[in-house]
Image (cartoon, rainbow, N blue to C red; front, side, top):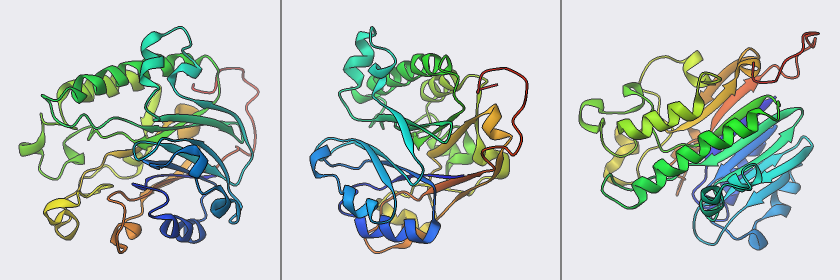
Length: 278
């Protein structure tokens, strides 16, 4: 099972690029962020022609998430409020379209577009921290469902120095501040692991290159697009890569796809009972 995540920075603007990548990479599931399109205008037919069903949660010009799958999708859940109906903050935070999940071949695939936060003194920064706190509560509720979890997306956080091009200068700033990193770590707990780091522990691997300042030409990127797996799925992971190719396109997204390969479903199911996260 091959699952990919890609912030496409407008699915309609880069539709040809996404179609070409799907045909080349052949993922079973592709999770998109920043689709930037209202649901009524999402290009379903273009993906259905390639064999992918779509589950979407969008809004005009901003945000937006989608799951494309050539495997059957069940139990699509949109927004934090899907699992936190009595949480007023979850309802408020769900107004921005940043959360969608579906059950695919027995795996709960959760696609997130975490707020950027803009700057430490911006009003968007406390919003980001509140959003990450709500994510922690949401994941706790999701755990009770018991499905194996693959959580992907644009997290807008470099978890540690290896994920930044200039750690000495950038640590402590937006996307690398201690409160952001702590909030993400608390949401993950000890049950979800960054699968890319299992296969590639070194620095120098980026998933986002700012359009400004020639970041792509200088290869001065950040690793802010992640795939997190529960223990059960982590044991099935056979590789995780960042595909830099699409970032070199003409008029590309500023992000590159990240792909994990899973030997799933396991050839032999365990007879032991237990939830899917353990």
